Image (cartoon, rainbow, N blue to C red; front, side, top):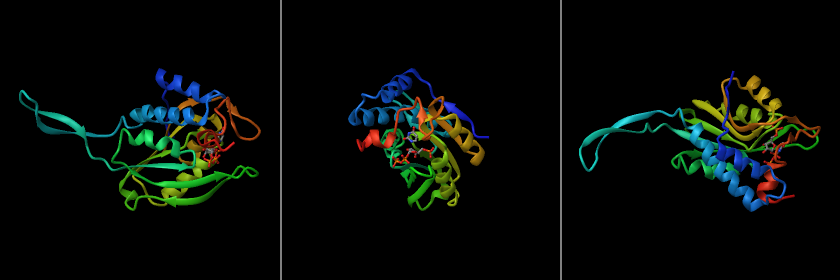
Length: 209
Ligand code: PRP
Ligand code: URA
C-alpha cells in the first residue's frame, strides 16, 4: 500500500492556514500555493539518488555529491494542479512537464478527461503528479489510470489537502503510489468538498467564483 507522507513543517502549516482562510484572495492564494509547493517539493525529492563527482575547491581536490541526473517529470492535473507547478520547478528546473486535464462533473462527481499530453519518454521517467485537492480521489485515480498506460518508472502524488476518503481510494486503486500532503482533513461534505478544507482550489487560484 502507498505510504502517506504528511509534510507538517511549521512553515507549511502556517502558509496552509492562510490558504484556508476565506478572506485570502486569488493573488495571495496563488503566491501561497507556489510557496507551499516549493517547500513540499523539498520532501518529495528527498529519496532521489545522488552521485559523487570530483571537484576542486579553492584549497584542494575532493569528491562531492550532485543529483544523479534522474529523469523526472511533473504532471499537474488541470486546472488547479497548475498552481503547484512553478513552485516545484524552482527546485527541479530540468524536470519535464506533462499535463492531464480532468474536471469533476458537478452532477455525477465523476472525473471527465479532456486533455493529456505527456513527455514522449515518460516510460523512462519518475513522475510527480500534482493537484491541490484529494477529495473523493476520483480525479487522481482516473489521472493515474491514464498516465500508467504510458508505463512511467514510478509515480508520486502530491497535494495540499487530502480527505481520508481520497487517501483510501488512492491507496486501493493505486497501491504503488505514495501520497505527499500538507494535511489530512476530517471528511467530505455532501457535495464532496473537503472539510474544513480550503474550498474550491481552482476557483480560488483563478478567481472564477
Ligand atoms: C478539483 C481538484 C481535483 C478534484 C478533486 O478539481 O483540483 O482535481 O476537484 O476532487 P475528487 O478527489 O473528488 O476527484 P475540479 O474538478 O474542481 O477542476 P478544476 O481544477 O478545473 O477546478
Ligand atoms: N475540489 C476542490 O477544489 N476542493 C474540494 O474541497 C474538493 C474538491
